[in-house]
Image (cartoon, rainbow, N blue to C red; front, side):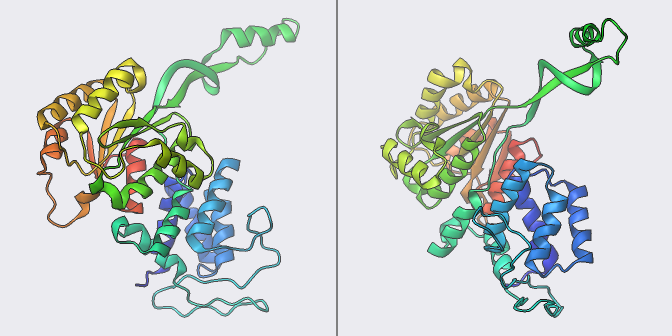
Length: 369
């Protein structure tokens, strides 16, 4: 399947947003305009156009490097993993529908119509359960660039700002430093802070095809801080510490050792009650973005699940449920557990693919589903 260059490039910017890069519409427009002047089919031109227009800070650069390499393949790089324009290797072009690739201008610099980036864009929409081993490995590389931040809330704390009210203490201190001479008033404003995110990841047998990808998604989320992760099946296990390992393979190995109920049944109602009694009611769920990643199959009493979901909904800022089955044709939330939980869910979204996880990240950040 071949995609035209604009679809691939816009898909890349969406993946950047899911990775935490603030690539808004203005930056995306500048990116596409820059490529209109350069060569949208040549990887190094795509790299530099994106780096200069889509990134706003040092943190963005690190995420951009990681995601570009996963999305378009390994580009020109030195030992630090950063792509550069010097000493280029043969460059790869995106497939542009209806247009012949341009001739390379440097010796040894070729621009074949490779489907690498197009395959990545197609992979974003594929159901995780149907991926091959090679596609799963590619998906893992893309998931390492993810980030997950809760919806921003205004706090009572104030911080220095260019606009806002006068900060009397800082203004007086500044006047004293200048011998009592009048100075420009120092201003402050209320600080913004992302809400805590709580992930409840179903590791029961029915979720086995998705468990690895969802835990890697949780690992990327936990790296950003203010994220708590629990696995649910027949037991509730807090795995935030295990997922704190920087290396995803080490983190997943630690989770595998800590979770005793892989591929078992599901007792969502009982485990949700255990979570609320031990952690949620004490403050972890208060005002938080709580995300349940589950297909909704329940072996216990659906009435218990319904009651605990209502309790969770009263505590949390928003409750989001991501169900991998929602994307299947003809799906309806008729399973007893899903039907019992749905009235207390603020956003019911898909969770079957990389693109679905990107949309989930946007919903957690405050976008409408």
